[in-house]
Image 1 (cartoon, one colour):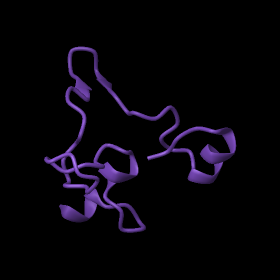
Image 2 (cartoon, one colour):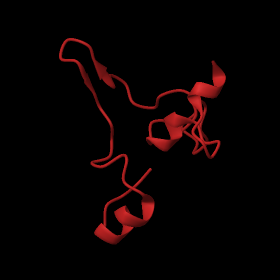
Image 3 (tube, helix red, strand yellow):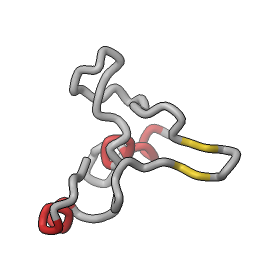
Length: 69
């Protein structure tokens, strides 16, 4: 279901988590594809998320000096 892929504010979850920022030509334009290769490590049951605190609000992250997607 396409609605399951979109957050309450209408932003696709891949963009919310910083996993889709670039298109296939590496332009800063999301294309609904994960930008990072090997993001899921099935043998270890791990998912790589490129931010230390992906669920932290942008305001909290900025206050602590952490980058956000």
